Image (cartoon, rainbow, N blue to C red; front, side, top):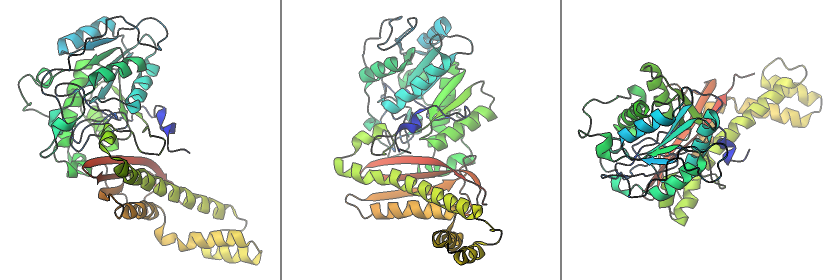
Length: 416
């Protein structure tokens, strides 16, 4: 399969979340469905290790006229409005929302094709008559010390055009003062143990800030469905957990990661990469694909060995029996299965991915690995080498001053 957008279809599992989008502290910001290093992410994206959030109101872009149909739309004219205040947002939901057909896509702005994929997925689910709210907010609570909030890109004019063309009904782009009128909230959502692992360990407090703004935006938009990108897999898992634990009446829908032609996951942070840094950054997706391919090769070997006639014993005995039959190729395969027994499954996946990352660490410019982990999607703890079932292979690294994350879901099936 191409590393590209096979990832573009909505995840068939509606309980998958993906990226939270945030409204820029004062204007929109990011996009890969990416949440800044400390904010909800977006369609494909992760929160940048540090992205800026505006501190005043949204950029002074004229709001599209209510009722204007965005280009490329079909069916009746839907509203296409920029709403900067919570009061305006509530009015828009009250006027245009339909019971059972309201969706939200949360972003930090700097929208790209990953975000557009989320918006199109939302529009497809609610239909032409439904209501799709897109939020653009750079959440200051998601940025930790040393994460340059002011660096986060803000491109509200372009964001509006992309959002409405993709099917948004309204874009909610508030200022930080609008979202947090009394200053930073004293009462916040705590992510718990899962929020202290991987991204949480690298960015303490990030997930608390992300969940707090996601909870607030869910209240403000009152959606039946909320769409998030799989690229921010840990964020997605935490949002699902929050919704389940705190009884939010919303269905979380995950949308697969959208990639560029070279395999790099779409992120608003990609724009920070120089040409040389981008070449090095491709090691992230190559490492993930290497792990996935190693798993596929192992499963193919196991399946072939299991299907051979008279094979009921261990792989060594199978190889001997096949050799006596003169089936040298099959015998070699069986030997390979036997020899790889100590480095099969999860261990082999990790080893294949790490080999690519180790090579990239010697590149110019080099890749600095933050973590490579093969985790249980339920709680993001490392899986043992004999793990069977679903897993997520996740990586985070810096290239130059830019921090990137990526992941692929895997299924380490039962051994045959």
